[in-house]
Image 1 (cartoon, rainbow, N blue to C red):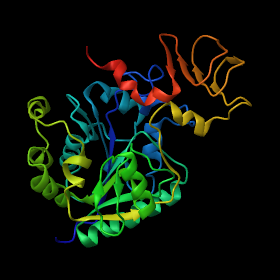
Image 2: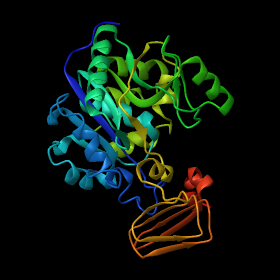
Image 3: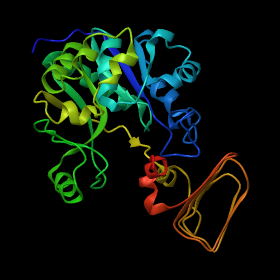
Length: 327
């Protein structure tokens, strides 16, 4: 594979649907617009941490059609034409393909809009290293995170050979952690032509979308498969390289994240807003509306806004998508 061009561009994937943090987030304002874990929204922070790596005109955002206007308001420095809305959701396979076409030539980095990075300077150093490796080798470079437990919610990558496995079962995950595999952080860096070639080889149904930005996205998306970039390309590709990243990465995947960023009381309750807990323990309660009192309950997630209330077992909040399944 020939060496790739040097100009670096960043594509932010911001097509969330607001399910995992409902009702704090909604389809109209999904979690990338939330600012509960810091002063900036997750989307704003995903662009802010790229400062010094890429100019605003080389930042692109792939979101849903209904969120284009809100995204432009949140990121006024990004050129309006660089914020592109998908007509329907087709997972990250289509989003990366479209982002490749929209960004054009150069070395492209794909980043998620719903992650936290505690040490941005280290993050930028890892991205620079990954981009340099991608230019030299023609590889798809992923940033790998040292696992803190054998999660079945993340993909794993073998740093020795780039072998990529998406979301293994619990026993396999434990084996991978013991063997020194890294978590896949969902950040991919490669030359534009490397991405296009990967789609041609491993996901031909998505290859035309990666080659050229369609004038009519609706018709282009109608026949696309719904598949992640991880399954469609990364598990199949042989030219994967890994740059380990120790920059305080956290995938803010659901309400459990509040336990990592908010202090707990003596009974293990994590609260935000006007909440009173009596003879209750190990609960997460977030209110942006009415005052909430918890009495004699354990292990719940309670989230309140002015429009809706969620009450769920904490052990089952990872299944939140069932609330939105069509019957």
